[in-house]
Length: 375
Image 1 (cartoon, rainbow, N blue to C red):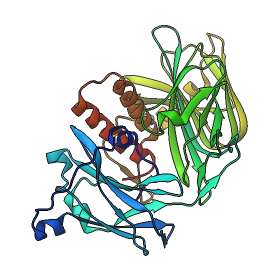
Image 2 (image 1 turned 180 degrees about the horizontal axis):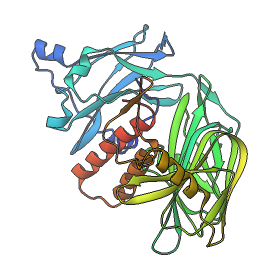
Image 3 (image 1 turned 180 degrees about the vertical axis):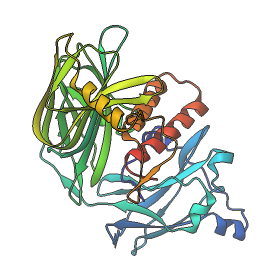
Image 4 (image 1 turned 45 degrees about the vertical axis):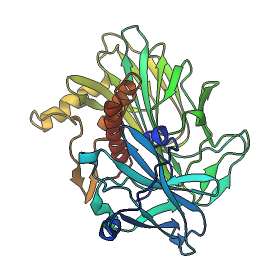
């Protein structure tokens, strides 16, 4: 399935370094390297435009070739080499600019993918008011962890949804979407890769996004600091599901607006107090300190559940390794995936080895695909 906006490492390494295709390959080999595709707007072929083939490897990146799209939305390109990410560390993908928005197809990492029709999904564009639109939040997971200097580190995963059929684009000098951060939040940064750095800003206690937002769900990962655990968390508009995770050790506190659920293990040796609620509308969540001698209400719940399960562990999330099947659908423990992505984001800021960086970005892309419900 095509994605309509690039993953970060595609943008970071696609620096428009042309690479000429060899013309001396044998006809049989050329057929093996043929990439046949189609550009679709919904189920309708998109007319016009130029599809660009990109190549990414540890030591080079750039445009390989380009071709104009036929009237029926089809195109044909030839890869300069056989894709095999495990052997050659070479990845290809195609892109097209449609109505001013850049759309990307999926990464080609194996030769077998050339046996299927390659698809790039595009959408019509709709300009939003200059101040942007309020978009529904399908899910929000907020993780709080006490740092060594006494501040609380927040990892905030927000899944916004464009429920329309067109890509939302900003007006001149405008934004597409804005959302408030908790009062007192400082040093807010966007996690690596979900949006171009120049398309996200943090001003006036809000995150503002000027990048196009296509139909469907888009996951944003934001990190910031809070001076203390006592905080008010604004949750404007409709929110499908909100879950708060506070890493132990933490002082006694109460949460207004969310229900205590349980204690979960999201990483080896780490436990989190978990709170949540569904179907929210214009909520203000308040964290306040409680009396030292008053145990958190979730402890009683945890003891009851433990007794019923005869000593079985409560919802334990470990580092994701494989999908779990439930009701015919493949899913990952969302919370564990979010923490894995956050760790990669933090590590990417200091990595210097190009091969290591590429490997980490590939891991991140795979994790983000699972967060979106991909394979």
